[in-house]
Length: 146
Image (cartoon, helix red, strand yellow):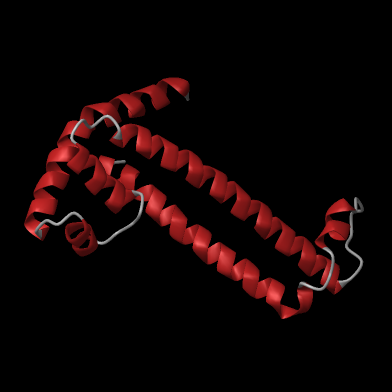
């Protein structure tokens, strides 16, 4: 995985979480929200009794997966922040945070940093070159842990 791909993971996972959350809300909206999730979660029998109970169990599983994705997202955000904080230049840090943590478009980054698009790309590439050794160390450390 390249450094750009690594940094882009948080924005992609954020979109997956938003989509899963919307799906969950959509499913709950269709008549299932009136039933108690607590009752279904506390039952320990092998076969659900009704179609509604089966649907509630599926919704509960989706909630669990969503919570796992949120945990992974928070961990990934912390990792990326830690990586970006290796940069001494505050302008480079702000630019990378806007792009890879907030998911802003290049145009929005340029606008909010009061720069031309060309300057944003130049600073971005310069920052990535500075971060590459830190990222390589992270990759190496992850190989040693696995």
